[in-house]
Image 1 (cartoon, rainbow, N blue to C red):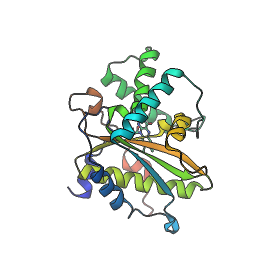
Image 2 (image 1 turned 90 degrees about the vertical axis):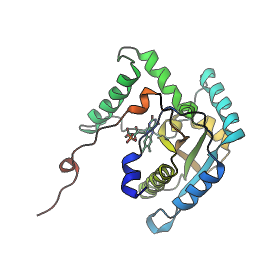
Image 3 (image 1 turned 90 degrees about the horizontal axis):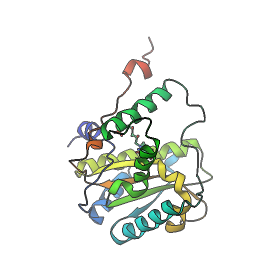
Length: 221
Ligand SMILES: Cc1cc2nc3c(=O)[nH]c(=O)nc-3n(C[C@H](O)[C@H](O)[C@H](O)COP(=O)(O)O)c2cc1C
């Protein structure tokens, strides 16, 4: 698989089969992904991997937290309070396309909320990771996280393994912090579900739109 194929094949997968992912594969991918660039080569990312027993225990912890409804520390607001156009419509369309595949109507808020809670089950993935960053880091270092996260997702593609990046975990940060026990200065950016897609799940058929090149790239004359 070449880079273009990995980029084209990667999609966010939101329903996984129970087929396990070998720890050695995850190690290999993270090791290779460490070649990702970062400003000044500061490599500001810190990862915690969940697989096998640790994942089992974590899923039980997360489920208990979900059902308890205990208030959570929210690390950051995922979107600006007033998401402007055209970004707002793009976000809306992606959600609507997903719920169409799931056959959940717009009015059925409980069903939509219920579906969203699958984020906190890693969408059934057998493995996952959490990506943290030092609280003292700024926007440039946060952008470095994107570098390595996409590299990780593409390398998993090469291994035939699917992923879904998950900012949703930032809204359940207390549970993640209690379980992971990272150094105090770290804050959670996102999680990532890792596994093999459930071929039969309609939601995995979602192919999101992209704005045409001329909307976001300007060639100066
Ligand atoms: C940093 C990041 C965080 C994301 N968080 C979530 C999430 O919490 N839940 C979710 O279902 N999808 C999440 N996504 C997936 C996006 O919705 C998805 O990338 C986007 O709609 C484009 O679709 P594609 O990944 O299938 O190309 C996230 C993606 C990124 C890059």
